[in-house]
Length: 302
Image (cartoon, rainbow, N blue to C red; front, side):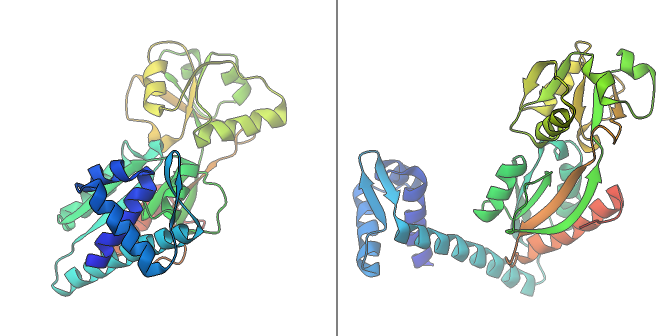
């Protein structure tokens, strides 16, 4: 695997943009790393980095090489998992990117259940929202993504999809908590709103609905943290917006679905990179995860 180690050197220099920082990360000397890069460029017959004042930047040839490196790493992980499967031992690593809405119950439940069956499988879970999660798939930083309302992408292969109704979230003593059933968005907007910021898909969904109606938003609090917003509404008579999968079972909180005439349901997507052959452990986890989501939320509408 020596060639993969050398290719790793290129990837680290590309990531950090400087020989010294990459060398520290790789635990080798800067001079040794420089020689490795020069050897690769000599073997390829062309430079792969532009030497600029700020450090080192990949040129077009370097971009092609780094893409090859990512492909090789993904293929190696798949082969390792298949080899482990030959001995009857399920090993491997699953890298998952997911929206915040799924970190309370959905993803922990699935990881726990899978590791109970295959304790030698390890996981990396990155909390990323819709745009960043799709980018993680295309950059081979994640094998799977579970996200709300991802942007359309030809690179994304949908494994499961369904719809989730957006809910108004408030403390149990809030005036809107006195009734049950769907609530109109206009009735929420008369109260101070504690809403996700524009880095999150929920906010884009809300903004689109408000723009169509020309309605103002009285946002007293904005945050990129759904957990912060849940804690905030416990402390004052504000209303937040979250999907059911992200709302914990807390008697101090009350949630009511927003009337679909005001806010249509959001899409929930489990996806992988199109055309990528997943490692065995990851593929098995993806199959189980899709099946579990079907049982949890209903029919797959992908």
